[in-house]
Image (cartoon, rainbow, N blue to C red; front, side, top):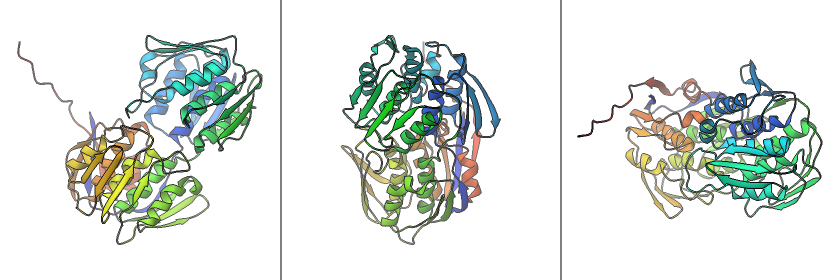
Length: 428
């Protein structure tokens, strides 16, 4: 079992480069199944969700090799539909993009139900609605989602809510469908735009990505391409927040500043200084960090994936802050871990109430999920003493070499291996 050990109390200073976006890379990797040929993907982050996705695709016949660090060649010429490994698929959320790519290429699909972080009920009903509109007959039995059809056909689809996953999945399936598909109430997140750009580079005809209406003119086939993944806005936001929480000053490079506007606005509001460059931001903490109120919203609003990290920062602010979680109803398990560190924080319905200004203390904690794990890392960086963080595999799902990057900024942090806990023997 591995743990992260942090001796906190040091402000972060220096420069750090952000990796490619996991949330953009995953749908693009699975969308490559549509291509009977080679795709070269650059700026791929080295995180466990990506490695698992490569194993899933290898298991159905894809040939995948690393050309250079963060650059991979994927050849899906010989992939076989419906043969993906059930246990691998259920271990990550992003594996559901295989449904859209198999449906789009073969006219049918069979994939295990996805896994990922548990934020309560995360249904795929909008995905199914979209697949059915495209002519699929969808069944969910025995832990699998199965789609049968005579081939995907274009349709007008209105999502009941703005779902990033459903928008991407239907867009992938519709890229090679027969006819025109219009997605109304589409998600506007940057990784939706990135996937559309990738598919267009392969020969698709997609317009409107980044707005709430996306139009896809189906093409008969796609060709291979070379494509670079966008920078990870959530990793960048996490380093911005960590900089302010530790009262430091860091230049964060390989970013798209526009993607960070909601985080930047909040940091400026609470007393930090953020200077934007073409592909970087310079974040400097103010001497006094003030309270604020945050509401998570779909892009371009404040991202739910930045909620736990922002909560850790606001524990160090002056006054009472509030975070209203409007996306996931159960994104609060990190709260108990921050309480272990002395945070005065509570949950009232879907609102987190944070009484800031009380210094945090080092304590043994765990990563409750991907972003919650980074929240306790940020908290540990702010307080003197040694904090051990368990269940770090959840952090490694989405952050490329985070310990080394924090060390380069002056953090005292390391990863250690400890013996697995031996269960206490039960009496007969």
